[in-house]
Length: 422
Image (cartoon, rainbow, N blue to C red; front, top):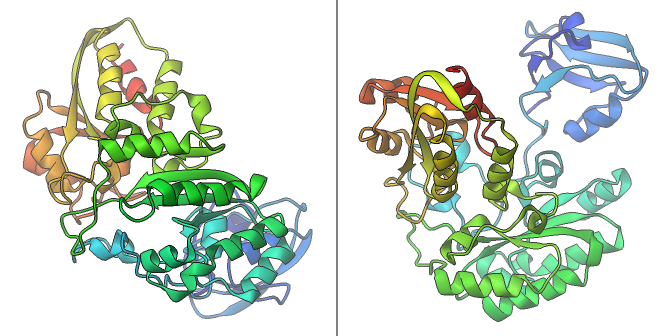
C-alpha cells in the first residue's frame, strides 16, 4: 500500500501542480508517511516539499508555498498508506464471518486499526493494541476513537471474541482514561452472553471512566440465515429489559431496533445527545423524523404525481408517518414499499444490506411506476448493489423508473423531487 492519489479537488493546489490520479506521494519534507494522520500533520507547514512518483515512474520534488491551514486538495485511495491492521478476533457474532461468497470484496474486509477508527469512525476491539500504538496516540493527542467493548468481564470477552488478548479491554480503556483520550463505546448485545446482569456490569464499569466515555451504543446481534453457530435473537422481552437497564446510565443509547422490537415509540431527539453513533443505527429514525419536520411541503402539485418509496423494514413505520403527511398534498399519491430481506433472512431489516433481487421482488408489485430508492442501498459513488447487480439491471427486470435519493437521515431530496411537479 502507498499514498496513491485517487483524485484531486477542483481549483486546488494539487490541480494547479498537475498532480493526478495514480501519482504516489512518497514523502513530505523527506518524511515518509504511514497514513492520513501523518499527512495531515506534515502538510500544515507554510513551505513544504513534496516528493512525488508520477504515473510514468518519474520522481519529482515540488516545493510549495502556501498558507498554514491550506489543504492541498488531494484525495487518496486509502486513509492508510502502509498495511491495515487486520482483525485477529473470531467473534461469535461477527457479521463478516456469516456472509456467503460472491458479494463485493469490501464486505469481507476485517480491519481492527486504530487509525481508521480515528479517521473514519470504524470500531476497534483493542485486541491488537501495542505499546507503539499507545505512544503514538499519546504523542499526537489523537481521539476520539470508537471501541467495540461488548463486555468488561475479561473471561466473557475472551469467550465472545475468541481471542486470549480480549480480556485486556478494561485495562486499555483505563489507559484511555488516564491519558484523557475520549472514546465512544459499542456493545453488540447477544442474549445469553452479555445481556442482563452482564450488561449492567459493563455499563457500571464504563460509568467509572466518566467523561472519557463520550457515548455508549447498544445494538442487537445481527443474525443472517447463513450463520452456522446458533445465537439467540433479541426478542421483545430482551429488548424491554435492555431498555430498562440502559435507562439507569448516562450517555447510554439503545439502537432504533430495540424500540421497534419492544414496540416502544422512538425517543425524542434529546435522548440521543449529539447523535454520535448514527452508523450503528442509534437515532437514525428520530433524525429522519426531525428532518422531515423542517421540510417546507407544497399544498398542491400542478400535475398529478404517483410515487412508491422503497424502504427497509426497520424504517417502515417512520416512513408510513412521512407518507401519510405527503399524501395530504393535492395531486400527490405516495405508497411506502417495505423491502423484505429474503437474501439474508427475516432478521436483517436495514436498507444497507438490501440486494437488487430483494428490491426487484418488492417493487414488482408496487402500485406506481416511479420508485424512490435510498442511496444507502447502493455502493457509495456507484449504481451497484451489494450482490453485484446495478440500477440498470433492476430497471430492466421491473420496467420501473428508479429515482435514487439520499434519505439515510434526510427527506430533503424526496421533497425536492416532489416540488419539481409544483
